[in-house]
Image (tube, rainbow, N blue to C red; front, side):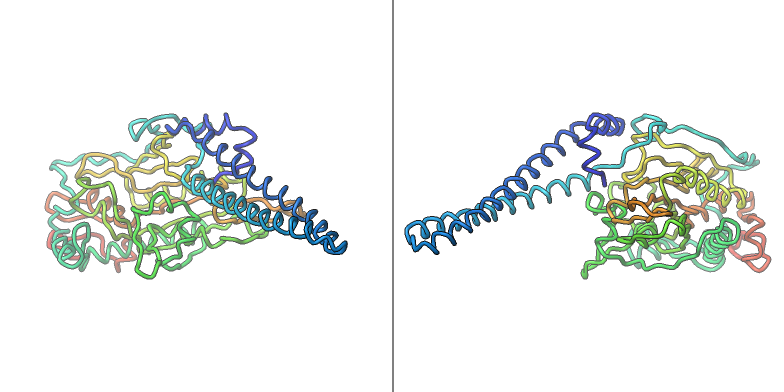
Amino acid sequence: MHDIRAIRDNPDAFEAALARRGLTGLAAQILSLDEARRARIQAAETAQAEQNRASKDVGAAKARGDEAEFDRLRMLLAQSRADIARMQAEAADLDGQLRDLLLGVPNLPLDHVPEGRDENDNVELRRWGTPATTDFTPVEHFQIAGVVPGMDFELGTKLSGSRFVVLKGAVARIHRALAQFMLDLHVDQHGLQETWTPVLVLEEMMLGTGQLPKFGEDSYQTREGWWLVPTSEVTLTNTVHGDLVDHATLPRRMVAHSQCFRSEAGSAGRDTTGMLRQHQFEKVEMVSITDAETGLAEHDRMTRCAEAVLEALELPYRTLVLCTGDMGFGARITHDMEVWLPGQNRYREISSVSYCGDFQARRMNARYRPEGGGKPDFVHTLNGSGLAVGRALIAVLENGQQADGSVQLPQVLHPYLRGASRLTAQGDLA
C-alpha cells in the first residue's frame, strides 16, 4: 500500500513509476479522492466548531429567558448536527473509496528494474550448469517409465478433479525427501528459522500481503471465511502484522514447508498435463523481515539461498530479473530462477524472490523501533521460493532420466532415501 503523503508531495514521480508498469492516470484519480475526502473532513470540523459556539448562545438565550431565540438556535443546532453527520458520513465513504483504490495499486518498481511488457522482456543475469547431452530423446516427467507407477493423475482427477495428482511409493518418497533436504539446507547452512504455520488464514492476513482484494479469484475461501494460503509467504510475513518490533531483532529470516492452494484462474489450457501447474502443491518458502538499509542486500542473499538449492541438486538453471510488465503486484524487484527441463527443452520458473520494500508493511501496519530511539518506521519485507517442491521433483526426474526409463538421483538426496541413488524403470528405489 502506498503512502498518500508521498503521492501528494510528488505525484509526477508516482505517475511515472506506475507508467513503467503500464498504468496511467492513477495519481490524478487518487489525489481527486483525497482532496474531496479532506474537504469533507475540514467542512465537518469547521461546522463542529461553529456548533460548539452556537451551543453557548443557546445557553445564553435560555438564561435570558428569550424563548423565541432559544427555539430558533435550538433548531439551527439540530440542522447543524444533521449536516455534520452527513459530512462525516461522506468523508468516511470517500476514505473507504480511497483505501480501496490504494489497495489495488501495485508497488512501484525500483529505478534499475528493466522496463518491458511481458516475460519476453526479462533480463538474464547469469546461468549455472550445462544441460546434459543424451543419446536419446528426453521425455517429460510423467512419461518416464520409472515415474509412471508413482504419479497417478487419473486417481487425482477421480478424487478431486483436474489439476490434482496422487503420488505413490518411490516418487512420493523422493518428493518428501526434496522438501526435507531444502529445509535442512536453509536451516543449517543459510541460518533461516524453521517455522510451521497454518494454511487457513483470516482475510486480514491476505490483505496484508496483497493477495486481496485484487487477486481474490486466484485463491480459495472456506464457508467460514478463512482463506487457504497460496503460499506460506502470507503467514510468515504476517507474523509481524500490527507489531512494533525492536530493530535489534532484524533481520528475521524464516523458512516454512507447507501445502499451498491456487485456483490457477486465467491459466486454462496452460500446462494441463503433468505436475507443473496444480491446484494443490507444496513449497518451501523463505521470508525475511528487515529494514530499508539492508533490504536490497537481503534480496541478493535470498536469491543465493534459492540458487544454492538448485546447485546442490545439480540442476542447470538461469537467473533473471523480471521486467516491469512481468513483475508481481507487491514487488519492487524480482529475481526468477528458471530450471532446465529436458522434456520440454526449455527453462521453466521454479523460484521467484521478491523485495517488497515497505509496501506490505504499510498494509499490515508492521513497524520497528530504531536503535537509540526515534520515530518508528515500517519494516521491509522479502519473500522467495526455496523451492517449489513439485517443480523441483519434475526437474530432478527429467534431468536424471536415463535411456532405459530409470532416473539417476542427485547425490544430496541419497541420505534422505536410505542410500538409494536411483529410481528404477519399474518404479522402485535402488
